[in-house]
Amino acid sequence: MGSTLPRLLPPSARDLKADDACRAGAARRASRAGSTEPGKGSPLARLVLKRTATPEDGGPACDFLARHSGLPKMRVKEAMLKGAVWLAGPRTARRRLRRATTALAPGDTLELHYDPELLAVQPPQPRCVAEFGRYSVWFKPPGLLTQGTDFGDHCSLLRQVELLRKATRRVLPVHRLDREAAGLVLVAHDRAAAARLSDLFRSRAVQKRYRIVVRGNPAAGLPSGRIERPLDGRPALTHVTHQAYDPTSDTSVLEVRTATGRKHQIRRHLALVGHPVMGDPRYGTGNKNLTGLQLAAVGLTFTCPFTRREVRVDLPPEPAPPPEPGSLAARHGPSAT
Image 1 (cartoon, helix red, strand yellow):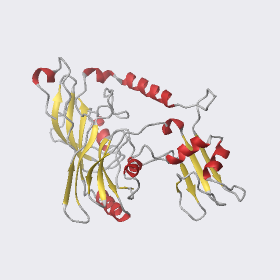
Image 2 (cartoon, one colour; image 1 turned 30 degrees about the horizontal axis):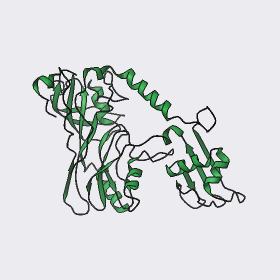
Image 3 (cartoon, rainbow, N blue to C red; image 1 turned 60 degrees about the horizontal axis):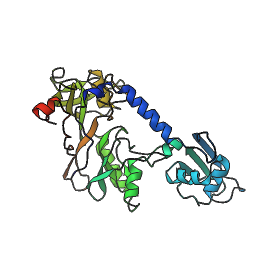
Image 4 (cartoon, rainbow, N blue to C red; image 1 turned 30 degrees about the vertical axis):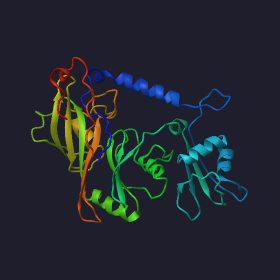
């Protein structure tokens, strides 16, 4: 079992000075994602609308939202399909509404969370790595959320799995992986599986393994292979195994496991000890690059709550590209990863 993994290899030296280029690229993408009304030059604005239907508000939900938002029906339908519209009734829970022809009843409340730049994004595609019947394991590429937000779910792993499976099975969350990170994510296909698998993660009964690229060489500074520093006022422990160092780019490849589950624990711990994850947009200095966050969840091991057998899923590394001319790898062969 396997899937394609973004390259987690030491970047070239020029990547270490790419902070300005990253910001400029993001600005260009945001500019291209902007859209305008037909015949008008001003960009469509982000808006949030919440309205409750009255007895006089008959007709389809799409017409109701178009009338109150001023948006064309075509754009409202797109927002509905991509999960940016929510419906709650007087006695029903809030849920996403995708069907444009849904008839409204008095007391129904519709929410439209409209962001034209977000709706224009083409999400990267996930891939199924392992199938276990009541749950499956997927490779989440970088840039894909695990779950959606009020402004839509088409850029989320869960929605993409639903579309790939053509809604033949339920798709329920078990745990999360940062949007910028790549790697393995477990998805449940019924409520009982979601509950029991979530319990495994809460009780720290799932061993998660990560492969990352960091700035510098932490081998000498972390002889114990442990980073034990509190985060948010709570104890936090990260285990680090050094795999390779490239002096050309002054970066190292590490395998990492966490013994606690604090927010952004790996990224924060490594930044605190002076070896931030390459490409991290939030933590560390001198670690910006052109290829994004170099952190991937590459392994999961746990006892299946239904068969009581050990399950181990590993994501093999992608073959290394040819080394750059003149680099250390070109002269002596690639370093181990």
